[in-house]
Length: 117
Image (cartoon, rainbow, N blue to C red; front, side):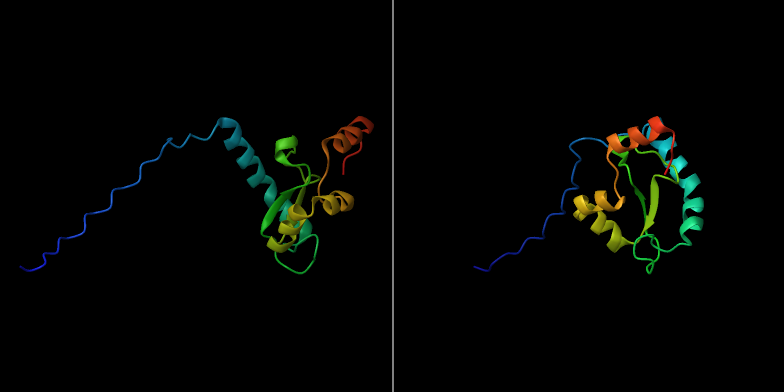
């Protein structure tokens, strides 16, 4: 008796458990606002990282995080290279000390006085 080989079955396509949600109007307008201010940000930093001053900008970093109410304003944005952006989020304590990250209460105090960064 000879050993029979059978062809391998085609892999089944994986099904998503949940369908992707459509982007909200708020998310769309936020992205459009960020895209609109990006040329001004890049002009301000001459397309060079605002921390190390050596590498090209790869990230638009929000000093006050978006989840804390951070806006797309030049005073809240920094142009950073990949390495510096990683460092900012890996060492938040040092980043808060240097002003690369802001706490909501610090921004509230600045807004009450009427001073913008």
